[in-house]
Length: 453
Image (cartoon, rainbow, N blue to C red; front, side, top):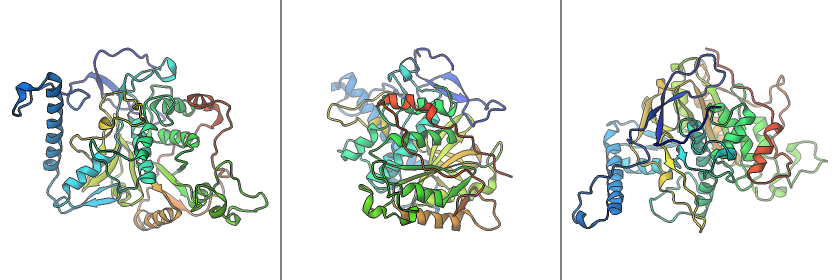
C-alpha cells in the first residue's frame, strides 16, 4: 500500500495507461497539482451586482458562487447540440427542443459522490482522503444511491436546491456519509474491499465494486435489498427469483415445504407484502480487449432506455465515471474527480446536501472511447419490473445474429455450483466492527472473463 501524506493543496488524478499484466481493470493515476477549475474552491471574484460595495467578503464569495452556478447551467444548455434525437437519462427520454430545463433538473437531482478530504482516517490509521484512488468507489455509491432513491422516493422524484426534502431522502444520504458507522461509506467499502484482494487505497474495477456492494447490503436492514451480481456474463432468472422471494432472516419458510414455489411469501413475509425483495441487479462485462468493440455500442445504449436502468460503472483507463444516459453516440456521465471537504449530518438529522448534487456543465464522451470493463445496473422494485426487464433484454439485447453482451437464461446451469442466496453472517460485533470482522467469511470472487470476440 502506498504511503499517505498530508496534502498541502487539493490535487487531482491524471491519466496514465494501466499497468500491463494486471488482473483487474484497476484505474491507474498520477498526481498533478490541482488547477482550481472544477475543484472544491471557487475564485473570489468581486460580484458585479448593484450594491456590491455593501457586501462583506463572505457575502461576495457566496454571490459569486451562485452566479457561477447559473452560468454553468446556462452553458450546459448551449453546449447540447441541436438535434431531433432524444436524450435518454436512466430510462427517461427528453426532447432537447422543448425539455432542456427538465433534463438538467433531472441530472442535478442525482446524488453526486466525489472525492472527499478531512474525514476520519480509514481503519483508524489509514488515509483521510480518497483523492486519487476512490473514484470507482464513488461511482458505485452513486449507482446504489439511485437504486435507493427509486425504492423510497420513486424515479420521478426531483431534488430542488435549498428546499425541504423528505425524511427518506436524508436517511438515504446518511447511508453514504464518510463515517465508519455509515453502511455504504468510503470506510466500509474500502475495508470490505480487503476481502476482494484490494488493499485500502488501491484502485477498484467495476466488478470489485459490485462484489463489495453485494456484501455490504447484507448488513443494511432498512433498505433490505437483494443484490445480484452476474457471473460469467450470465444472468440466471431462477437464481434471482429464489433470492428475491427469500424471507427476512427472522422469518423462514416452513421446513415441510418442499420448494420455494410452495411457499406463500405474500402471507408470511412481514414488510414484503408483494413477496418480492427489491432487486439491485449488476452485470459486470468486458466488451472488448483493449477497447470497446463497436458491435456492442447499440445494445449498450439500449440499456439506458430501460425503465429499470441505473446506468453503468466504467470510464477510461485513468478515470472512473458513473454513466447515466446518452445522446447519439455520446455518453452522459457524472464525474467524481472533484475533491470536496467532508460533510457530516446536522444535529436534527438532516444533511447540508448542496455539495451532493452536481450543478456543473454536462460531461459527455464518445461511447467508443469507453474502457471495455463496465458494469450495468438495474433496479426492480417489484417482480413485475424484473419480468418486464427480462422481456426487454430478450427483445433489444439478445437479438438473433448479433454478438450478445451477456446471456439471460431461465435455469441455473448444471455445471455451476449450486446457487445459495447470500445471508448476513452471524457475528457478535456491531457497527463498523462488523465489516472488519467479516473479511474472511466470504469467498474471494474471481474476476469476470473476457468476452469472446
